[in-house]
Every structure is written in C-alpha cells, then in structure tokens.
Length: 494
Image (cartoon, rainbow, N blue to C red; front, side, top):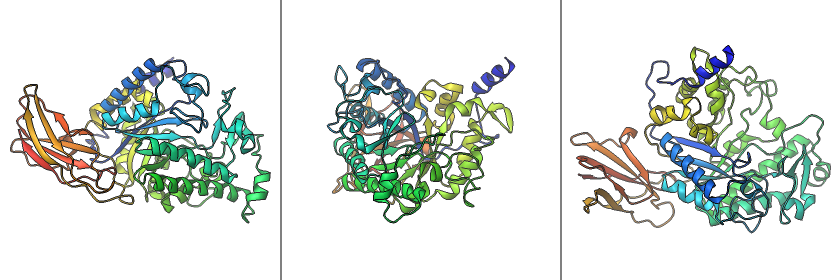
C-alpha cells in the first residue's frame, strides 16, 4: 500500500523547474506524438465517435504544444485510408476489408485537421508486419492471401519476407501511393524490421538466403543488407515523388551493447543491429533517413538500459540528421528522480534534452497519455516546457533557401473584430512555396526580435488571423516553406 501511495505521489507531482534553473524553450523543436491504431482503440467506435475522439485529442495536444502528429495508417499491410492496393484495416472497422460506415477517410481527415491546427502530419506505416497476433481473418485482397509465398509465420505473426526483392518494391509502391494522394508532411516507420526474437522460433529464410545472398556468406550480414537496401529504396521513392516529405524512423532504443561493439552503449539489452538486423546508424550517416527517433522508453537508472546513458549515446553517434527522442510518458512519471526523490523524472529528462547538443525534439509515447494528463505530464508541457510555440527543426540537406516575404500585410477591422491579413509571396517551385506563417506580437516601443519564441502568437496555414480587441502592438508576419525555412518579417502597427 505504501509503495502504491509513493508511486501515486510521484505521478501527480508538478515539476516547476530543472534543478532550480528556468527552462528555456528553443524556437525550433520537433514536438511529436504517436497516435496508434494497433492497440485496437478505434474498433467498434464508429465514424462519428472516432472523429469526436480524435478532435478532442488534437485540441488537447495543440494546447500542450505538440506540433506534429505521427498517425498509424498501415499496421499490418492494411490501410486506415482509401487504398486500391491493400484492404481497409480491421483496426478501423473491426473487420479487415470492410470500409467505414458512414464512409470517411481517416488519413485525409487527419491531414486536414492537423494542418488546421498548425501541426504536421506524418503517416506511420509498419513496413514488414503483415499480420498481428490477434488478427484471425484476412481480406481476400491482402498480400498474405494473394501471395502467401511472400510472407513467413513467426510467433503467430505474418512477416513480409525482407529477403524477397519484390517485397521491398511492394512496400515502396504502397508508400508512393500515399505520397501521391495525401498532403502528408512526413512518412514514418517504426522499429519492426525482422521480427523481435522469440526463444525457440527460427526465421524461415533458408531458401531466400540461398537464392539472393549476392555473395554474402554471413546470414546476419545478409539480413542487414536486405533492410539497408529497402531503406535506401524507400528514401529514393520519397525523393522521386515528393522530395519535401520527411522520412523518419523510430528504432528500438539500443543500437548495440558495448560488449558486442566498442562503440556501443553501456547497456545490456536487445540490439537493433544484431537482433532486428537494423543498421540505423548506417541509414543516418548515409542520409537515407531525414530524422531519427530512438525509443528510449526506460527510466533514468534502469540497470539494463539507463535512459541517461542512452540519450548521451545517441547524441554522440546520431547527430548527422535531426535527432528526436521517443519518450514513454507513463514510465517517466511513475519513476522518481534519483537526485530528487520527491519528484518524478520529467524535469530530469528535459534537462538531459537541453544538455544534448544534437537532440532537437521529442515524440511522446503515446498521445493519449499526454491527453489524459498522466502524472500532470500534459499540464507541465502546456504551462511550462512547451508553453511557447515552436517551428520545426531545419533540414538544409533537403532545402535551405527561405521563401520571400509576405505581401500586403494589413491590420483591418470590418466591424466584427480586428484582423491581420496578408498574401503569400510569389514562388516558382516547391522550394519557394509558403505553406504556413508565423505571427509575432510586440508591445509598442518594444524591440522587434523574431528569435524570441515567447513573442509568437500563432503558426498558421491561413493568410489571416484574428486579433484581440484593444491590442495596441506591432505585429510581424513571416512565411515558412515546406521545410520551415523562415522568410524575413513584414510588420504592421495596430
């Protein structure tokens, strides 16, 4: 009973500062949240209720400061969107292959809703998983029914065999279809490559290894090569279809343990490289992914996988592309800060973020935990850590040129309240397109400094914004392109 009470107190403790020092939020930061389907939260909910639930979640996440949603749209070679390639997901309707009724397209709806709130939408696909453990019936047009020879069973799962080149082509075909038809800002894959190892289970790929080994004699090296080639192909697909779409991966939190690699982390757990055949650092260093979100879900002080050890390791070895940290909200608030046992670990983890040179953001596992304000986590975000809006981190390796300034900025009052209105700058290519705008507010006589995020009123995709009554101030509006390059400001007094 005493242990439960201590846990409850830790989980509800408000974190006001970081070791007595004020937290300074950066102007640019990826503040993401995963919204998953595979846990079955939408099954049987119906169109109206699901839309109401998602609307509430997005509204709360917006208040928390979240600026990107990673939305699961392909849990098991299925679709939470209209697809002519794969069947409707059972995680949407309860039965695979059955369209939602009343009809709607969740991905299309989520893109529109996120953009309305100034958020990015990253479509999250599981590339190789073809059936989860609890799925008992597959639709007639599912890949495992149409081509059973292209999947293998493992621990009651079906896995698209990474050893077959046609499977990489198929996944890229699916991804290209999403990109062509939806205005997504990112394409996201998680930690499921070759299956997580289970004692007594063997990956049945002898035949493929014999046929497609390409002279590679080591089975592990061959499996890694299969995944490496797929990652490169998916990167190239995105570049060919929509080069501004960000390609992100959220790998398991341990790359390699030090006992297996002198450059590995001082940990003792499952490894991306050796167990999942995912050479994440190769992808980052080759530039095949645009951002990386290691799932460091453990607590500070975990004996096998210490959070502090891992965030420092990823910061040291994974800095050539934007690095965001996957955070487990529940573990964070249920564990005590080892240096201040009266509080949970939220403040300590944010301090580590701030001290890490290459960490540029956070992705919350999972969105609902923030919405439900477990351990006051969501409340602390909106009132403290993410109180001021943030622009997305820059990706100059995709595009580094800023758009031109907005045109025709005016402060007007049509009798229904004052408004700022402007026009998008001219553009010739997608590099120059202004897709959103930042509105800053400065008190009369105050020095204009658009590097101060506390002066941001809103980040919006519309060329207008309502102003508060009696708002004597100087307003500055800048344009953002698809890669969040920011134009020079245009100002007006009201």
